[in-house]
Each structure stands twice: as C-alpha cells, then as structure tokens.
Length: 523
Image (cartoon, rainbow, N blue to C red; front, side, top):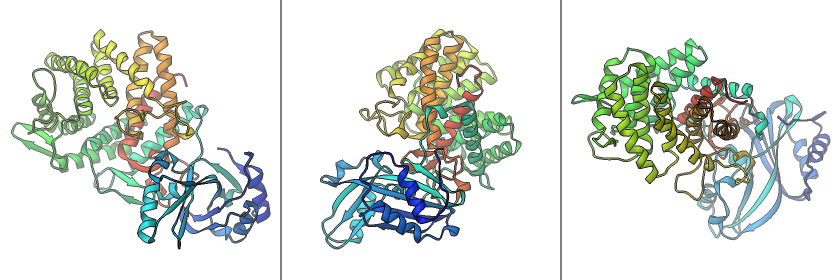
C-alpha cells in the first residue's frame, strides 16, 4: 500500500503535503470534493468552487472535526470538458475515474468519481435522478479527478485509483493469495444464517440483501463451503456447510415420479440437480436417498446422442454451455467415488457430443466446466482424447483475457472481449475460468508440456491480480462501508460495481484452493 505520512492535521500542512505528492503537470484548479466519514458512514460532504486547489483544501480542512472522523475522501477535479452526446460518452469502465456535472438553467449537481463508487451509481442513473428532480434541458460536463483518502488516526494520505489501491502483478504472491483465500472462506462462513441459508447477493453501498436467488449458484456455494472447511481444517466451517446443505435440501428438494429435482423458482434445472448432488457427495451418506433420485434425473435428461434436456418436464435445451458441463462434472465426482462402466459410457457419449457441439458453437462459458469434468475423469482413466480436448479448449480461451488491450490499470487480468456477444466481465467468470485453468496447468505439468504450463501460468497469475483487486480486504477499499463484517473477504462483481454475489466468492475460492495446493505452481 502506498502511504504518504503527514506530520500533523494542521490545514496548511495537510494541503501542502497532499499537493506536493502530485507529480503530474496539472494546473491545480477545479472543484474540490471533501467527504468526512465515521466508520464508513457519511458525516458530511461538500464541493468547493474551482478557483485554487490549495485555497480550497485549506478552507475545507479547517472546517473538519478530525477527532470524529475515521476517513476523509478527497477529490481534486481537472481537465473539464463539455459532453455532446451523453449516451456515447460514458462507458461503465469510466465510473470511478471520471466525474460528471449535470446542470439546467436553475440547478446543477457535481458528482465526483469516488462518490459514484461509494454509492454504486452509474452515469445514467445519476442523470435520471437529476432529471426527475429538476425540470428543463440538461447540459453535461465531465472531468478527471485526483483522489485521496486521509486517515486521520494514522496520519497518512492514501492515493486512490477508482476509490481503491492498485494491485500489481508483484502482489501476486503465495502469501497474499493464501490470505485472500482465507478471507473468502470467512465471507462464505459469515454469510450462512442461523437457519442455514447462504447469502445470494448483497449490495454493500445500500447495506442490504437482494431478494433474488439462484439455486445453481447456491449449491455451488454449498460445495465450496465443504471444500473450504476441509482445506483450512476448520470444523466450524464444516458445521456451517452441513447446516447450509440441510437447509437447501429441506427447502428446495422435490420428488416427482421416479426422480428428484431442485425447485428453483418453479424451474427444475439440470444444473441445479447436478450441483445439489455434488454437494451431497461432499457430505457423506446423510442425504444419499436424495442424491440417488437426483442422479436418476440426470440420466433421464441425457438423450441417446449424448445431449441433455436441460429443464425437467420440458424439452428445453437452454444453457447448454453451463448445465451440461455441470452434470458431467457431477458424474466425474461420482465415478471418482465409485467406478461404474455404465456411467463412464454415458460420460463418453456426452463428451463426444459436446466436443462437436462446442466447436460449432464456441463460447468461453463452456470451457471451465468441461475442463474440470474431463480432468477429473482423465485422472481415473488415461484417455488421450480427454487430455487433448482440455488443451484445445484452454488454448482457445487464453486470448480472451484482457491485459495490454485494456487501458484501465485495475481491470487488467479479467476475461472479456467487447467485440464478442458473450456478456460483460464478471468476477464469477474470472473465478470459474481460473478453476478450469488450474486443472489445465496441472495437466500440462503432468504431461511434461512446459510451453503450455508456462502459458497457462502467465494467464493465471494475471487473473489472480484481478481477483486481489476485486476483494474487499482493507479499511481503504471499504472506506464507505458501514457494515464491514458483511463484505469482508467478498469480491466485487467488477472494479466499478461493488455488488457481491455468492458465486463471485465461491468460484474464485475454489480456484485459489486448487492453486495453493499445487506444488508445481510458480509463485
């Protein structure tokens, strides 16, 4: 962490120290934003006129009640310019980097970048809110801002980038990744309620839980809880996992005809059945009867050509990129527990079908699930076709990681191609790709393929940089969080959207545990 010590909280000294730290050739004029917080909660904020940074800072610092403040957010605006076309001028990636001023003939509102991060506000929502409160034509200006966080108790200034500290590739060490994994485990365990329900989605800026839910992701979380408890040898986490599984089975398991399924808001998804069954396998024999009924459903949904119907009691084949691979991974877990030639033949039939299907319908989401399934099965039966398919899938995936092609330094390492229709960047996507890549890396090492192992390791390390960037883990990146135990260890969805979803944490934690357990990974 880059810290700038201050000798005293005297306004002139603070202003001089802060301005002396800015080495870029800026004119040091423009509006100044100051927000005073106590344990994340806003006490006061003000925007001072853009005459002179030094004068504005001295004035603002002179008015602050320092003994009652735990952090002070500082924004110094510069490079102002008018916005001609609002809709094309503000991409999401600009949030937290650029600020905006909205004005009519009678009213105006300046929103600094750190405010947008703290409130999780988009440019469009800010404009819509301003329009609802003020009549007339709206003009827009945008600006850049130098951002700092002053921690009065510690007498330090912290330079910020998008309301956070930048993580470098040098920060990707075994020690740092191990601590990140531990904190993710803390988040998972802390977010199991007394009844056993696991948080699906949390909005840090509001301090509220979302009412939405998704049982595919919920059962992925259950699997992760069991594996984290084993990895960290934490008995209390194991008890939370057991409580969570019992809650999910009691609330969502249903039986129909000869089969079991998971009720996901009235839908019976193949993926939910497969992941629920996988979670049960982590537990032992407590819910063996339910797992057998879910297993029967997965076999029932497999078609003679190896494809899957993906929703029970329908003919729907939606979400093939996810649910088919999730089912094959469950079957691999089951085969690892107890070998069955009949199930292996089923696996092979689907493997052949989906290998051809994917080549005709390329999508990155397909890769990690099928990689993990094939890798687990390859460990049981050395089928060269499985090995070759793992390498082919992951070689194809590598170029979709952003590095030099993304200008925002904090976004480097994520997986996203803006020119492809595969959806926006997301922490959960980075995590699940890492799960598959961790297996592909190990396979390359095991097979003596040093060139591939090195290529995969480079991409993995870059992705880990992004994971560390996304995690809530210090008082600096949580400067605006009032309910910190709810977010500590959690992962933002993106660098500019602080929503935490269970699979943001689950996928990344499962990937990190694989890598930390791998004696061959080059930290």
